[in-house]
Length: 220
Image 1 (cartoon, rainbow, N blue to C red):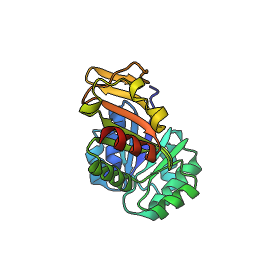
Image 2 (cartoon, rainbow, N blue to C red):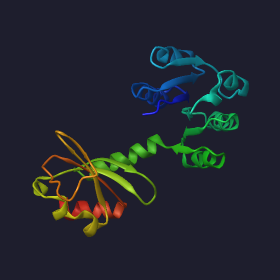
Image 3 (tube, one colour):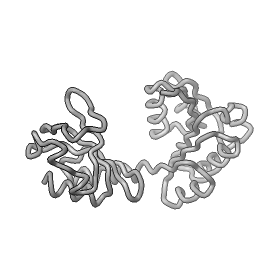
């Protein structure tokens, strides 16, 4: 895996969580926050952590942020500073800019100014939790786009011993099982001869309707 350099602006719960995980994955992370206490908390975790005002272009330039592969704007509660920081990162030539949005309107503004990816952590987590609450077999749910979703479903007892050829989800429902997580390891791109066992985890891709149809017809 190619190691990248990330700059994270805003070291609150979201920004610090992203930074810690990127470090765990072996990447280099520069954390920036105007709050000295937050920076102190992350100074021994991230590659570098500095106290700075990210809305000042000269400050970002002096920190060399334009040389980073990705900038993450994780500013928690100040929409104006979030937008201004994202504009500066784009103007300075950061290769990819990702920003946390506090609302749909905030997100639309970020998209208008050219942010490469807008993240809605609270909204997206709410959607995932809601789906898990109404579907006992659903372990995780990720919306890829307005049309396609990836879902993780636990294999119930009624499907134990059934091969993918017998199940035939693509022909019957239009969705595809792209991986099976078994106790002995993950099968990527399983074949028709692969057999499901109770408590395996199926990773399924399809539209919301296709996955819902699959779950209601086969699992419930």
